[in-house]
Length: 315
Image (cartoon, rainbow, N blue to C red; front, side, top):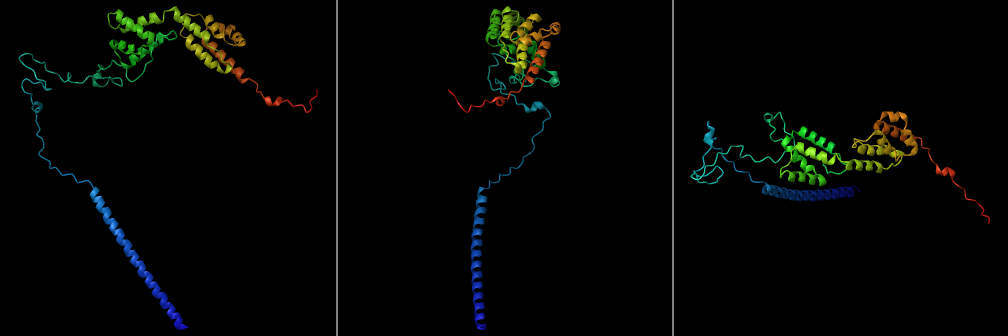
């Protein structure tokens, strides 16, 4: 019995030794492959590494000259500093100043600062990166408001008087542009001054009965879309009504109430509103009246009045 046990232990020991040998051989094979792969990667990295630039030795420092004129080498006789030859016996070129060689200024995107460059505003003359409103010369446009905005833009950006027409004419379109060209041709091809141009535009597009009649017709064409749209109705009416200067308050009130409900029209003809003679008071009363009607509208429940289908049908 004891001999069988010893023989079994010896067999187990031999099997364990053989397993250890096989494992050691496998690990040695794996380490060999890893070593080869590491060597190949290092060789590839060395091949891809950029070459080291050569070190250029520094020479002697440049010579410092006390006289700035020593840095300039005059051109040969008969040649300008820009390489253009000429015969000095025929003509003499005037000396060019640094200002003459400066490239032309194409424009700027910010207004010139009066605190820099000694307050120089010589480049002021062009409206910077903003887009003023264009003017087409249509009946519904307000030429006085457009000219007022243009003067405000010119003042804010320091545009001089002689450059105002050059900037404003680029904003004229359609009939207004044609009229401006007519003024230039009439003036022998010379653009009018800003003062003359404003007078001509006001005379053509403001002091005309046609424009006043067109604005009145636009007031009649405004449609009332219901109580909930009263604010929009007042705003559309105000924009056009404010452009008609010579119209009495009763006429303004009549045009405003002509398309409104009859009960609201009677409410706005109250003596207190009539005495105010102010359309802003009329707009305020109209908005309050419409808001009251909208808020007091009863809630409708259609399912409460559902009909029942009869069970029997006679006849």
